[in-house]
Image (cartoon, rainbow, N blue to C red):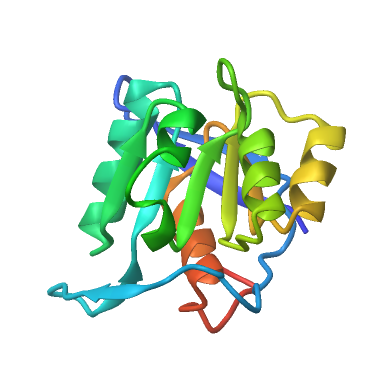
Length: 171
């Protein structure tokens, strides 16, 4: 299924329309990581979400978006830093870029799957390739978003990954 999205660019304040070819969201049956609750003015949510991206602006924007929705977030500039972090076992969702120096998101997913970790992955990329998308989805990814993506779409897939969204067919 194709998703139509609207993005407002601050330099023009005019909407830019584009279509994402991410498949319909699907639920994972297990996240395979310990979870804890963080209270929020909106509602309690299952957290901790790891954002792994070599682009500092993507990390900052994603961190800000997720925190505004009541999630706890840890950001990492590279996959190796995430794998060595003390928060690895507390992470309930990973949002990662596909292409990064040294180790990309697909390799990160493969390492965690080999260790028996089934934490859901949300992939983002500026370089969508069918073979890479297939590999990510076969590894249990919740979705594969093409940059630029809009905030509501990312939040929708995070909620699907965490099992908090009841209508995975989306808007």
